[in-house]
Amino acid sequence: MCGIAGAFDVERAFFVLHDLLLHLQHRGQESVGIVMDNFTSIKGHGLVKEVLTEKSFIEGHTGIGHVRYSTVGGPEEIQPLVGYTGKGKLAIAHNGTIPDASHRRETFLERGAVFSTTVDSELFLHYVSIAPFEDSLESVLWALQTVPAAYSLLVLNEDFMIGARDPYGYRPLFWGKYDGGYVLASEDSALVVLGASDITEVERGQVIILEKGKSPKIQKLSVDRPGRFCVFEYIYFARPDSNLGGINVHKARFEMGRWLYKEHKIQADIVIPVLDSGLSGALGFSSESGIPMDFGLMRNRYMGRTFIMPTDRKSSVRKKLIPIPEVVKGKDVVLIDDSIVRGSTMGVIVSMLREAGARKVIVGIHSPPVKYPCFYGIDTATRRELIASDHTVEEIRETIGADELFYLSIEGLIKAVGREDVCLACLNGHYDTWVPEVDSGV
Ligand code: AMP
Ligand code: SF4
Image 1 (cartoon, protein in one colour):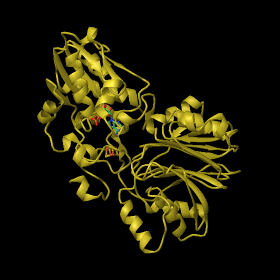
Image 2 (cartoon, rainbow, N blue to C red):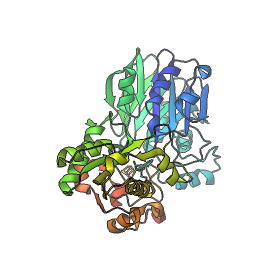
Image 3 (cartoon, rainbow, N blue to C red):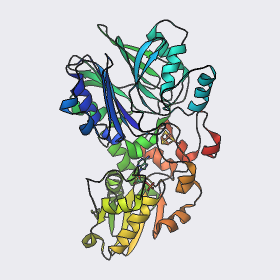
Image 4 (tube, rainbow, N blue to C red):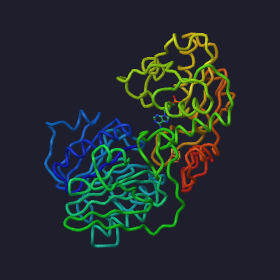
């Protein structure tokens, strides 16, 4: 999971990119980078506000940026990547993962290519190099055509900026007008907050070409694939104020909570959201069931994200979420969260609520069990780490120590989101591309 942003022909592009990336920070907190069209760059580990400071300001009207939450490649390999291709120097910012990257890489290595990173995104630079065209723009289009998934991608050189979504449309991308130029971002909410106008979703398989001194051009990649927008963007990743495929993310989560109650008519005294990810779903569950919602868990906003902390995740959860005994004591509580991945977070929360005096702890999850890994750009862990890959719901309930555990069905999820052209591979194991079989387990 990553966030990408572009600013084309605007005043002080550095600050525009700063603002866009700040509003995409939830998509990645490991590193930040921006590259201008003259290839000056600022990159660093940490948060946007730590890397893109007044002191690190670089001049320029056009640039691309990236916030990273690494799925492939080491954390030192900060995007946007810059490469000298056979068609000139290029910078790229990529959100997504290429599932067959290792095969593609092997093919290049056998031909004598040398890679300077382990990031799958570097493959795009190599494809541009070998494209059967002289022209760099044609070569980029050829490279996009050659890699069917999964990407939302920004490509920059001295003459043009390109924004593209793969033909399946796994990852989001939007563009709009700003300050006489154009801006692009992974989520529309970042463009809205910036004050951009004419905000439009880049369609799957669409390529937006911005050239200096010319009107934007839109091209379509000629690949016939089904629409597979990542349903997890609605469940967990995207900001609640974003609108993806015309569907508001908060509303989709609210509906997931409603459908969860329609499918499981649970009796309880209070609904407690697991902050922040379970809030919209808990509101929906409470509104459908009539069970009042209360904040039985306080969240320490100054702790980082527990999911990605490599060591001692359990004690991090204890520091991040703190129960309020006055709310839960003697009550049958139903906790609502968006998902269970490895199961470590929920187990800790259940025991904390019991220690705080809850009589019954019931857990409702507003997505179906995550049974299969993602190969399209989301770090949902390997199959072995996914608790639902080899445990039944009853076994998971026992592991997390809940009195009851229930999930939303896949049908309920689709009804709640209101669109069918979504990827469900981590939930049902149906991948639409080649994936590494050993790990997927399908
Ligand atoms: P776990 O402890 O592994 O079960 O983590 C589940 C929690 O992490 C849930 O509260 C989700 O909100 C959150 N979550 C789910 N998927 C991801 C992901 N890919 N990256 C970061 N957090 C996630
Ligand atoms: Fe999203 Fe899951 Fe598909 Fe990955 S496998 S793109 S997380 S829906």
